Amino acid sequence: MSVFAVAASGIADATARFAASTERTARDPLADLAGEGVERIEAEVALKANVAVLKTADQMYGTLLDIIA
Image (cartoon, rainbow, N blue to C red; front, side, top):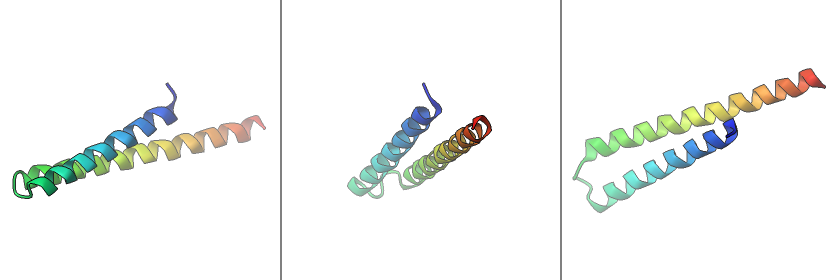
């Protein structure tokens, strides 16, 4: 599996986790407010990490192509 596919999968997972957390909070705002806040922060960090992986992989492939060319 390529780095791009793994990072894209991670982005999709983090987005789904964030959306699920917001839906749970919308249904019952006071059920687990602190837990849902933590879940959203974790999803945000995971999203940022996967975006960083994509950027780094893109830069590495670009550098490799420059070296080969």
